[in-house]
Amino acid sequence: GAPFTDLETRQLSTSGRKIVVDGANVARSMKSEIFCCQALRIAYHCLKTQGFEVKIFLPSAYLEDPGVKTKECDNFPQGTCRYGKYCFSAHGRKEWGEPIRKDPRKVPDDIKILRALKEAGIIFCTPPGAYDDSFMIKYARMCDVCIVTNDLLRDYIEKQRDVNEADEWVKTHCVRYMFVNEVFVPLT
Image (cartoon, rainbow, N blue to C red; front, side, top):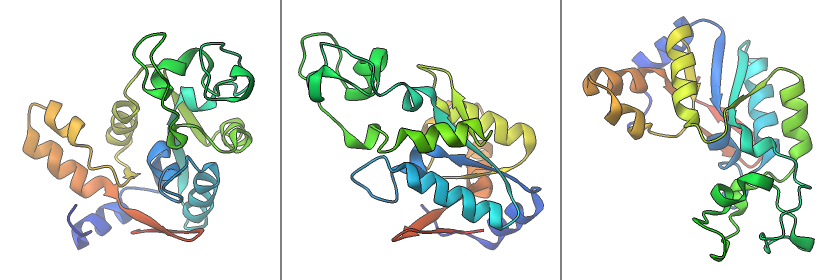
C-alpha cells in the first residue's frame, strides 16, 4: 500500500479516542509463521498507553475450545483439533476424507490470552462463518474511528457502490503497523 499520509495521521488524531484492531491480521504479523496471541496483548497495551479505547475484532472460531475431539482431524495428537466443529474451514478442507493442511497461522498459539482479552471486554467475536472485516468496518464507520490493519480491504472496496469513496475511506481510516521483535509500531 501507499505510505501513510499527513491526512491519514490527522484523521486518526481527530477520530476520537476509540480504535479498532483487526485481530487476525495483527496476530499473524508478529511472527509470520504462527497466530501469535501475544501480538494482540502487545498491540492492546501499546494503543491503550497512547490513550485509546481499544476494541479487537476476531472471528469466533479462534476462541473455540482447543480440546474438542474430532476423529476426522488427524493433524493433532489423539485427533484433537483446536477448531472442533470448525475444523473444515480452519484447515482449508472442503469435505470429509480430504487431507487436512495444518496451517499454524490459523491456530492460536495461546488461547488463554484470547480468552482473557475477551473476558476483559477487549476482544469482540464476529459470528461463525461471517466475514469479520465487514463487522469491523461497519463498526468503524458507525463510530467514525480508525482500524489498525495491514489488510488493504480490497474485498470491502470492490463490493461498494461508490468504489472511489470506499477506497478513500480505507486510505484515511486504516492505520498501518509493524512489529520490531516484540515492539508494536503503529503509525499513530
